Image (tube, rainbow, N blue to C red; front, side, top):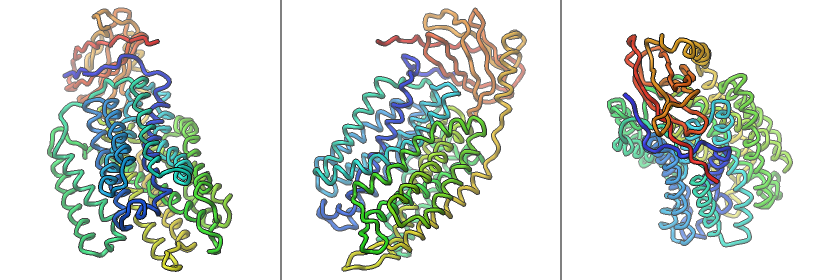
Length: 577
């Protein structure tokens, strides 16, 4: 059975695709970090109680958590570029809504729409997997995965500068402008991926997952206001558990589920997602602690007395170092594998937090902590999508990376709640104002170190990557070139252009359900190719040739000793000037 893409790219991926997709990720991070400099002023700015003002942040978190896996699945089904543009467009609308109001409910609605941009990260990673050659994929996914940290690091000082010298609504106009620019660049540079998953969108699964996530994240983010042992908090946690269990049972019975739980339960995916939660925790702790430590007045005896802008500049290297580690990750991963780089990243994070316990007495020390933690978090973040992509079928890349991004978001949410509670319970009351203490900061760093230790344990349990498919592919390519007619169990056919003429020397790659290369062949002068399969199951045949757009077609082989005939029609390449 073949599946023909409905939206073929009209040109091959250019060298600008990776920076444009990474820029989209940075725009998402800017949206997330936008209000950090004015968090403490939100009650006055919106003329409301502090407990109500926190909904401006909570609403974005909840909508982002819901949108991430859903947009990933929609991208797999209907086109990742299309859904990326939709995510950014919804964000732009939300930013404009927020820019034009000081009303609490309208602001919450605008921030809820902005949360939809979170889907851009897994969609960008999925586009890269579908379009880029294998040798460029590692560094590209690393840059995309790290863009959240990069954007956050850059946005902090810039947002602080705007908040100090302009009306705070200018922050939203800036975000809308960046979103519109990202949409324009995506339309100009990024072709649509031809890869499509089979099946339909699981509406009930989306509703169930959304309900379960909201019921789970709501008490996490509001527990400190409601009380962790209150009936509301405990009741929502219990309701979340019931809904997610029922959702899981339903997903196992659906033919085309929103999330393939059987794939998710594989050790390679499960332990990567568990490690992702811990990386999310460790990333957010430093983002919460360092800015507060830097801005507290020196009169406290431990505050560093820096302005909002200077504090942002001192924390910015956290994100910038994450960006620098992307090419370093690519080299290390190519030699040792993403499991090694994840473990190395976790170890560097642990060193950063451990050293940070004794490096809190000067502004330059905060800079050192930010650089070390940025390097570790950058390596860890860069490893996660590579581990996921290597463990799931090509048709599930968007949904699987969406779930992985969600795990990181859950980590940051848990981190925010726990560290907020720690800092509140250890604060000193000075004139009715709660002032965080050095003890609270150190306990927060210890919690982060503990989270990293758990994440390190999860990373150690990751199975070793199986290199057999790559080794087998090279030998099969030689065999297919010389003995195409002898292939009994597999796929064979011709590679044709849009007019039906044969395409000589086209490269055809066979990808199995785990997303790994299971064979490759080069078509002869008549466009004939032949590929053997290791066994029955679903496969993706990816074909590419100079002067033509790429093609990815799904096909199924029963595993019996026969060759399935399958012609591959490459789209023509449109030359743009």
